[in-house]
Amino acid sequence: MNTYESKSIPIQDVTGLTLADVVNKTCLVGLSYFNLQGELLKQNLITGSVTAVDAEMGITLQLQQKADGSAADFILPANLSCWFSAPKGEFHTSQDGVKVQDPDYLVTWDVHQTKDTTADGEQQWWEWVARTTPPQVGG
Image (cartoon, rainbow, N blue to C red; front, side):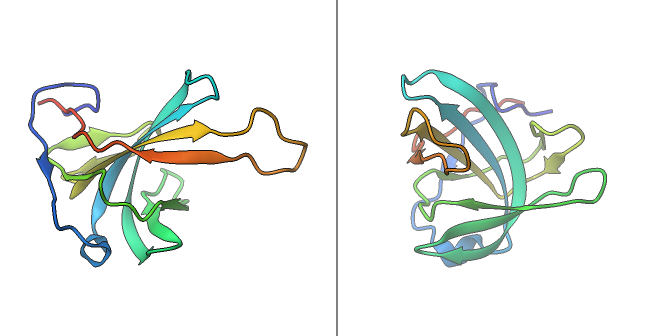
């Protein structure tokens, strides 16, 4: 079983990848959330298939279904600098019972909080920073 934190299988860069290339592809996405002080708040590992791409609106993933059959869309920025070819293997996500076999891509983002407080009902603001260093996985 491969895990997101291990460090032994080299990951390949996908130079020349275009938005059109990722449609209908599966990806494993690592998300690290940080507060204003740069402290790690949480990490999530999700998986899904790319259903739509738009240079302005982003990359839409249909997340893999939960055991109860429910699924949701998740939108990533339209920046491919943090997309890397995934090695073969089974990957477990942060969500109980959700795993992916042989995803096409590994994607990693750092998401930084940009406002300290928000009024009730007001949207929180986050800055997405692509991790352009290949993620480390193990066998």
